Every structure is written in C-alpha cells, then in structure tokens.
Image 1 (tube, rainbow, N blue to C red):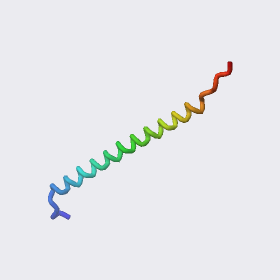
Image 2: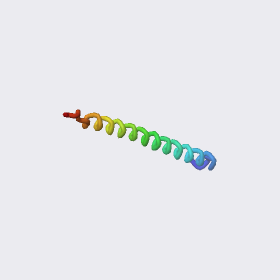
Image 3: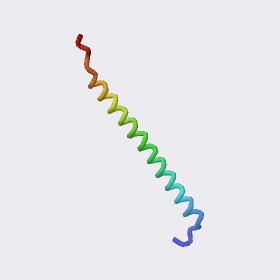
Image 4: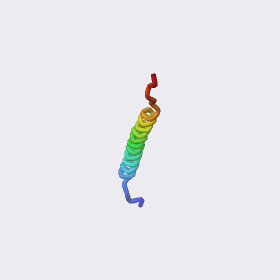
Length: 52
C-alpha cells in the first residue's frame, strides 16, 4: 500500500505503541493486586491464635 501517506503509518505506529503500553500497565496493576490478595490470604491463614 504505497499510496498511504507516511503520516498515517506514523499514526498507526504510535497508536500501536500506546495500546501496548496501556496493556502492559494494566497487566502490571492486575498482577500487583493479585499478588497482594495472595499475600493477604497467606498472612491470614498463617496467623495462629495465642495459646497461653
């Protein structure tokens, strides 16, 4: 498709990069919350009641 202007290719490239970055950021925050939930659940199950 050589008739497409170079500006359009640049727009497509920038759009691809932005979507990829958004996906990475979203994925990072999702995994962070998942790790926090696992950590909290492990902490709550590992707490042992005091036996005096």
